[in-house]
Amino acid sequence: MIPVIDFSKLDGEERATTLAQIANGCEEWGFFQLINHGIPVELLEQVKKVCSECFKLEREEGFKGSNPVHLLNESVELENGPGGMSQRLDNADWEDVFVLQDDNKWPSQPPEFKETMKEYRAELKKLAEKVMEVMDENLGLEKGYIRRAFCGSENGQPFFGTKVSHYPPCPRPDLVHGLRAHTDAGGVILLFQDDQVGGLQILKDGQWIDVQPLANAIVINTGDQIEAMSNGLYKSAWHRVLATRNGNRRSIASFYNPSLSAIIAPAKKLLEGQTTKEEEDQDGAARYPEFMFGDYMTVYTKQKFLPKEPRFQAVRAM
Image (cartoon, rainbow, N blue to C red):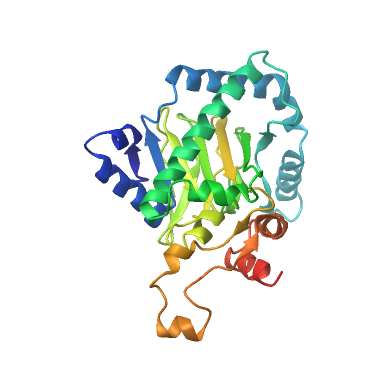
């Protein structure tokens, strides 16, 4: 079961215990769920409402004519044809998705969508920065280290995007993924997932484990850049979404990522005292190269669903 952590206890007598729970979530799982995180329940209820309505009003019809639906129909036709063989769709996801940023076009329906999601994004951004400060503390880095690294230049800004996804009921979940297995390219990801319809799984110790739906929790996962900055102490975990026959799974994931110009590398403080004789003969204590996040994204967009390690090898060579 994915760790569930009461974030409010950071401010009380159980601070040390809570810090240790978050460290364990980052080191052993790469995923954990936060409850009592400070985001008003009324706002979360409104977010659920406007995102579900937006899908019905603006997205549902379009999904019916989308590429994954066409491909699945073709595969089922093959099964019903002379050969009787359907094909699993290994390069498609049964997902309707759009991304919200400060400067892109947002859906217009329902009318309260923009106001609600703007408020929600502001709350999530603050929570992300609190979580990163906890990571700073647990790693023994100075407060604000990760955020400053994500800014890149003095005037730079981290990227903060919100991906609104729906996974509609799928007639043949045996033939298509909801979302193929991958790790996240960026920094800290904050997911407000459906509390009725499951489907999200993470890979731990060779086993796929359900991320159990939990009302009003925020699921935190660490991306590839946190893994690199922590020199592998924190894990960027593989995860996937299963397609399901029943229920329209809602998923709202916010990504706090470095700016494209940010230089990412293992934090020097973490390398002190780590070098063994064997590592000296190879490449020092750093297990990850220094690279520009924009270069990493160029590689990632082509290799998202492929093994993680070659991405770091590719940016090392750039």
